[in-house]
Image (cartoon, rainbow over all chains, first blue to last red; front, side, top):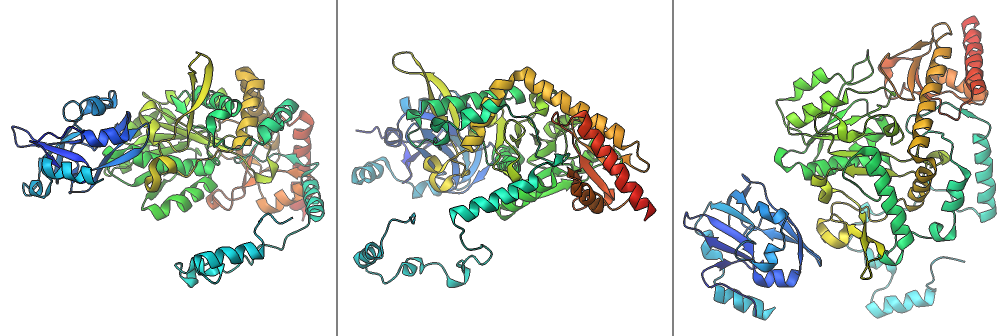
Length: 129
Length: 457
């Protein structure tokens, strides 16, 4: 059974969003997604300063099995990317919700969060797959 | 025997099964107006015998000619062993392996090829080859735009001294992709790029600056200054280089402070016969940072479960089966046979052999220039340092002179008039290590004769 932390928001494309203490949105891919993809070998991240709209492509995660695009779950400006993933892409497998985070963005529109799924809704989504 | 195994009956059965009338119905989705209307310009098929006769007739046209043309394809000596080994069944039939790891011999050959190219360029990694030098430059443009995301631009600076046909191919391949190619003028006195003009381009941003060195005229560019300018202006630096020249010039990884980011070129000078224009192959190498943006594939060396050496497909980050619709490279096969020959050629020649070929070609071209420019009104056009090609100007129509030379079985050079009309009656000449003292003298005497006749006329 995949780990689906209840305090996070989720997209249908299997990204998660956490709002940190400063109100910034941190984005990663879910435990379920990393399980499907398998061992990560490479991550391509957006550039700091990029302005992204919801569902824009913001990078690629590549595993031994497949390469998969990452979509922005919310809109905003990229303010930080997880540089450590360049050398340790396996963090996405081991800690998808912690050291495996992908990037941080400055939310353009708080209302975007309301469009996302709750943990329960996401659990239902992947149960149907 | 036809190569399509379906009988009329088979086809009918298949059409009936899926419930359509004719094969054409399968293409209904494609508007009639844009479908190919037959291949009018292609002649009807010849029998094997007729084809053999035609080709040997054409091959004879190439015989007994002394070649002094370079311009991207060079007549170098290829040891007999190179193609003798290349034509072995194991190599000849080994197309890109689809069950790659089962073809260890092919993978090892490609691995050695990549290692040789990495050695010649000094760069971190080389791929398993591209189609040719021209499409290699286009791939380098696309790769630079992918790799230079910071620049956030689809503009690329291209030196005007890059092979004109390469530039045409670049336009053809990239212009439909919303990429703007800005061609930089060269200095007509020196025949190289004048780095000072680059300051005119500092107000805008470009993904890359592409330099050919030795350039199309055979001249050596100010590569250090240009590479450093590129890096200071957030541009990637791309080298287009004859791989043979790298055996005597410093590796592209040492251009400027940090070296170039990408190098491409045509591998023909390394063991591939001129063969009326191909097939040749392109090489491509890059820094570690850009490796995942490189088209094609990379073969790696590893060990199996028992610790024995083995070779494997290590990286093919841009290919269709990895990136599906997002694939940015359709080079999933390589120019396998030409690359095999080239790898064997490099192994046989060794670093010293390649250096000697390059040096001998430089010396021969210098001899040719010295001799030809003794003729009245035949002048060396550019006095820059050069590799094994040079531009000379003629006192009369260049096309007519080249034709008169050809009538005497001398292929006297490449007429620059089509691409560089500002140079007047100028030709690009080359004498590789294959040209003997007598060959060079014959060219001199014949040219002298032709020009003295035209003077009297």
